Image (tube, rainbow, N blue to C red; front, side):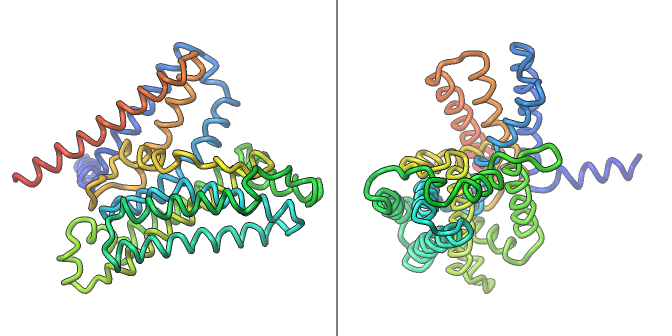
Length: 333
């Protein structure tokens, strides 16, 4: 019995675990509440759709959470999503094989991440300003790659079989009864979780967010750590861009619009502190699930889009307010 108590205490003592567990409890309550209003929420197909839709928020949340734990923010992440979707689709409509198109989009996205990292880490630009600039640049590139228009269907030039293979891999097919989109997001989540919680780089990420000056005195290369977290953010954005391209079967210039805010919401709902230095990716998983469950449930009970946005917005503000209050109490102690 004592062993069980000590195990529970050790789990709860992990910084950020309380917020993550609270988000999971909230998720269960929200899901059951919507299900009681509309039993279709409990249907197997709706659960599968929830997991698939949540995956995009989870990936964006992972990237944004890495950045936020260092005390920074990435406003360009949504534009990188759109740029990646447009580059991938445009190349495929010109006959470029899907694998090569995705790799080129990945290189372009990583380039944005590197620029963000050096602007913030080396040149000390405020992250809001630096990533605001790259947000516009990335969105502009997304507009330009196909001449300021959305692309044609990727199957026209690439061929139906190749296009179907690409779309099925990233969006429409299932493995073990669950959509591939979720499995892709889950694998990336597990890798990102391991890196953040079990490696030296992960410890450095938290150290910079807690106290960047102390981290530097301890020998942490704050510039390279900052570059790497923005690379993680860019990588996740590219994957989401590819998923959106597969979902639509074409490139949409407005793809990824507002996704930077979705990433912030997924993180802060799950306990990632926007002030830096604390939070768990487990909480980001819960936050992304809460976000998507709210959207899905409000939609299924017929709530207007405006109401959906208000409810989610209030939850985000309350989550951040609680974090600020907790940080204030900790500072006083």
